Amino acid sequence: MTEETPEHTVDWLRRSWTPDAGRPAAHPNSRFTAPAGQCPVIAPEWEDPKGVPIDAILFGGRRASVVPLVTEAEDWKQGTFLGSIMASEKTAAASGVKGDIRRDPMAMLPFCGYHMGDYFAHWLKVGEKGGDKMPKIFYVNWFRKSPEGKFLWPGFAENSRVLKWIFERCNGTAEAVDTPIGKVPAEGALDTDGLDVGEADLKELLRVDTEGWKAEIPSIKEHYETFGDKLPGGLREELGELEKRLG
Image 1: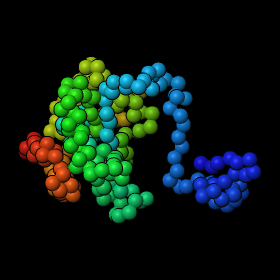
Image 2 (image 1 turned 180 degrees about the vertical axis):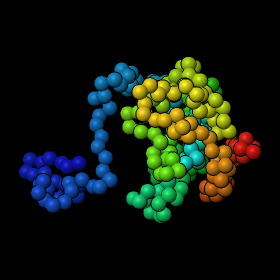
Image 3 (image 1 turned 90 degrees about the vertical axis):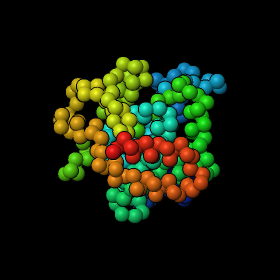
């Protein structure tokens, strides 16, 4: 983003800038933002000081394998667990070896202003207080690939199909099947009308890779060790239950 001044245009380092300056005006990792109030379909009560109900919370990481397209947590506690182990594979832009797993719980690790173990405990406490009124928690992964390295899901606007299933799950109208890691869409529950994704690819997108998840367990344990005694016992319990369900 550039900043207009009465005299000239400046770049992100406040240096004088023109289109022929020979350098970009914005930082390579810059973002564009706009006021939420400009959204034409935003809820009229979005700034209500009393707050607004939240039906669903979505977590997501970039994973080429193991993690299905969408998973619904069984309850708030399991949803907190899924958020706490969230991971993405490193890209060429990140330090380390491309393809390595980097765990970033709830995408909050660089931003949390206090110990992440206390942060997890806060989530669990909020869930206990809210009971059955808590939002459903979902884990999405738009980046699953075939063994040949091809993205199986087209992404972009087609992600609205997954959001539709999530909305329908919140309304109690969409079918799901139980798996060791949570619920995934039942056959035919995901709206694929007009979607150019083969049946075999769709099954792979929603398949729960049991062996892959078993292989994740040591990495999750290592991740949890970084939080020491601050890690809530409830999350260790969830990890133990996952191990049992995976067999």
